[in-house]
Image (cartoon, rainbow, N blue to C red; front, side):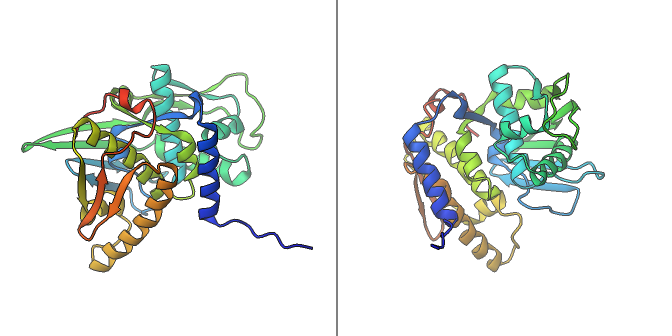
Length: 298
């Protein structure tokens, strides 16, 4: 009997990227993320504390958890937020329908319908929907601050023990007015297939969405490129690493690994690692809708 060799992570991603290139996607592949959620990101792993903050230039995102549930972290809240932002942009309403069964919603997120993913969805949904976000902006010595819950209310009617059973009424989520406005005023277009393909690594997911956004900014500002210092990238993406020189080295190594994975799906991106930082050059836009986006220039 011939032993079958399972493809490694990189080989699987190369195959996925090739498949996406061959089929070119459709309307369902176009997704959106709120601009602030691209500039600053959620924890990659459980920080074990009720408060978390990340900074990107003039923008900072703070998350305060409900102590009963804890902070959202990992890939599932990112998939949830991508779906929420996409639905809000598409439907132009803060009232979102989650579906009539748990498995139906898991499929919408591109997740499996096994017991493990059911539990991950339930746990991270509670963490995400019960958290309070605070986004601050600094410009010319002035500070703007916006506090907002993600949801005003959520009604999840699924029976977790019977995830395929369709309920008479659809489960719903009503976004808060402030969060709805924030994510629909200047959404960042992304390819949902890419986000799902990279979902084994929350860092790779973050880098992909950020790369799309940064290249768009270069295009609208008519700039050939920018070098972003490694310590700035660590503040934005690497809160899990220590403040020592060793922590920066470890972050840089992991960041470049995940950057290569993101570039498999965005090979046109002009990105080069330098001693003092990461060079990002003006490149071809990733989605045909990006050029129509009305993003802020922060």
